[in-house]
Image 1 (spheres, helix red, strand yellow):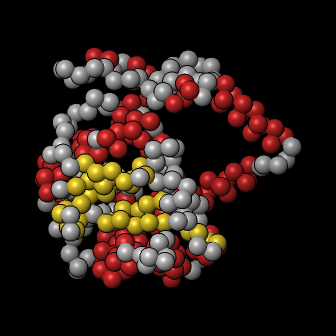
Image 2 (cartoon, helix red, strand yellow; image 1 turned 180 degrees about the horizontal axis):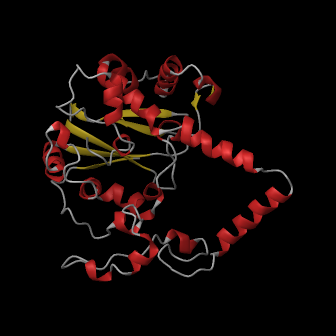
Length: 301
């Protein structure tokens, strides 16, 4: 599914406050319970939690009760049983965590984006696959990573780039025939996401607040992320007020396209290259600037 937001933009303060609700700001359950007095004038107080957990038989995220909700208790019991039977060991768990910590990280996606910034032909090949090979980006990205990281083939199989790395589509922010386009990725059903290039999904990506609001108010999502970032985030590059910088960026965006990631297609965003990034930069310098969230589309560089 692809939707677009052609509106001039909504207020920087949203009705749902999903970033605070989902804990992105590090508030935690206790703090969430105390936010009732922080609602903006004219706004209804936001829901205290992601209701999806309640639907699974458990308490909302903000419920401070010490008891485990039923599904979590069953998961813990099953995990302990696997340990007791020797099916799952501590070393296996450490290997699993290490894989996502040391091998599959946003550094891989950032390396791909930096290469696309430096090589327009590579970017064009990623974003304009042949009609008879709609997921050619998967092969191109895999071959690029293999060329840069000799041990990478251990985590590939066929057209897959590690976990959830198959059926990849790449979209690019910037000028197009439709004007200046910004792309945003969400999974309206659950949490489909190219882990092989971006690492493990952040909690907010899986929250109902993000999954619903990304479709109907993508500009508001971008503003909320900007408000959560330090004002002088890119001060070293002449961007003294990051929130004002994002507003300026959104001012030139004529269309926001929201891509619904699913089991049949996963999406990677090539962020618009900032004006302060020049061709004199190395790919490593560019990669150091690129964030995971910018490759989802919620972050403006």
